[in-house]
Image 1 (cartoon, rainbow, N blue to C red):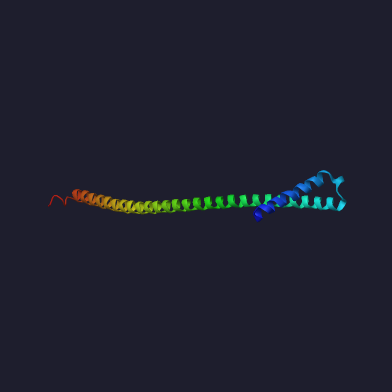
Image 2: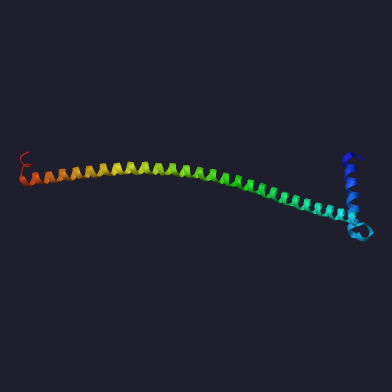
Length: 131
């Protein structure tokens, strides 16, 4: 077998021996039993650590994905905000144009009213008849 295959086989034999020792401690001396208990505890600790590491990695991946999603949302919202700001600027410009036109119309109306008033005054004073 390959080196990796041999190591897997050796590991399997080792853990079979450890399980057998833990299942029947009375068949083994105290030192061997203590080593088996320590190996089992170390393996359990390693597996728990690997599980926590895997959970942290999953959480990290999810966090990174959430961060990317939020970045995309932020870029989208910034784009919308720029568009709204541009529309607001256009609206302000249109309001200014309309206000200017309204002021011109009011000034024209005032001039027309003044001319009408002046004409009425001239009619009353008879100066229009002389023309």
